[in-house]
Length: 601
Image (cartoon, rainbow, N blue to C red):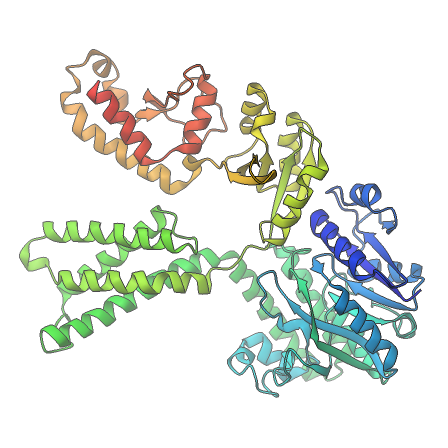
């Protein structure tokens, strides 16, 4: 047999399926086999392989044995002269497989072959080729200095920055996402070191193969897709700890100088701590960066405008302008937050900036003359922020690496949705997908698998089942609808998340309720119904617009309404249905329309 492809999988069912499809196609014309070692997945990966790919040799581990042990087990069963260690979150092609195998066969000095890797957006992944992590290159990597000199051979030795990423080159370390070698070479060095549970084992194997005199060759002319980190993505402390423990194992094994070990262990500990803090504080970082950018824009505009219009750049250097500027920053930040502009979407950002600008200009016009600074500074700052913010957000907003999702499969028609879920996995929406057939299973499965998104086709549910879906999940879980796309005879996803679960919408609702109280309550005693509910409306225990009774415990912002949301197209809907629909569709505009309609009537 020419080649055995070994894939270790853990809870990436649809990524694994797509990977197997690509490998199957790439192996056509070759004598090859696919071996999947499953590390006790709970997402139907095993059942999928048995049902769809009976030619795949499947190894079912009783527990998660880790990357090294699972690969060693897979290689021990391999019948091929050559092996390919491959991640399940990759997508390979025939050319990459054939050219790697051809180079390995024709060059006896080659120990391991790697290829150029890109992520789902086509961005080159620097870890495709790496240098041995000696003391200096490790420190430059840990401190981030290597990114300041990407093409420097010494400073960026960790990523071998002096080598072109699209050429054939000898390197010192190849990634475990794609490693092709002869089985004899793998066995001659004892395979992967099982002291590494996950991470670091590819560096260790690369080092031991090089010590035998074999070369590690990087085929930059061949390219595969690697959705980096999708099979192991986690923001938990245990995940970060495991990664840096692996680095410590590598240091203890490959460094003999006490000083080198001491320096690297300190660096690894600090890097691990910083990595964890960064993962947990990314949203706060974005907010801090927003404040910094707005402040810098105001500073720039006031300096330029002062010099141009008043002849001196220091014209606005006074306490009045300082307090005005603090107010500008605060209002723009509140507007950015309230109107969901934490996304990279230009529309959301621009809308938030100009809503904030209008509020600032209104507030400015109400200030006494001696407390004003300059309208032009406000307007010019808003124009500059409109240009800079969308660009800055696209630059710094991190892409999701896949959420954990559950699919309520009432139809149990796997073929119908298979392509849809593969595409969602490869478009950075999902990484873990679990399927259930019964609404009653939802609550337990959501908690068990730490689910973040729920998918279902509402057209297949009875009314009571539809209500049960929303009753069985916390408001932090996003609900997505799967609906037929008639023209294309395919399926599409629509967001059905509850808008009223968003804290900014709850603040807007509270603010609108208080405003309406100020307008209506002074005259409300005229109306008997308002008079009877006057105290509750005044204290906020009863909202002008809210839910009808009964209110389910999982509804967000559970406030009873004096007036309620009604679907005029179907007035026969139950109170529960209308409450759920109101929570999903809620916006200040809907509340305002209901209030105005009742006042007119």
